[in-house]
Length: 89
Image 1 (cartoon, rainbow, N blue to C red):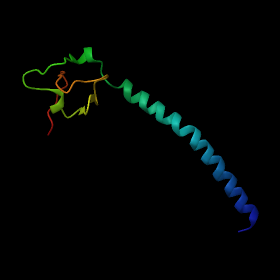
Image 2 (image 1 turned 90 degrees about the horizontal axis):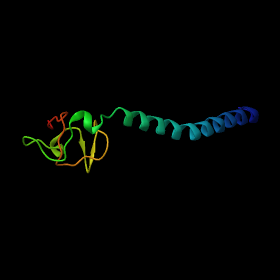
Image 3 (image 1 turned 120 degrees about the vertical axis):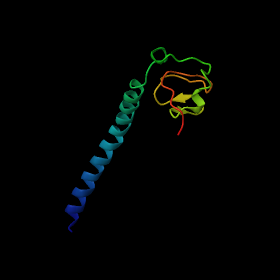
């Protein structure tokens, strides 16, 4: 391989690395926003901060400690409840 071929490859690599460095954070932000938009508002799922019939968020498969939910937006109480409750398997 001659020196010129190595320079061209290095140049291409640096261009790609620069583009990736710039585009990766943009892609991550867009993905986070898309995921957040897919969550249901609390009012749409009848969310309440107290358990209902022995069911509570901490026992739901969608609950993410300490105060999140995979399907409902905003902070969630571990003792809360919503109509999307699905017990852990």
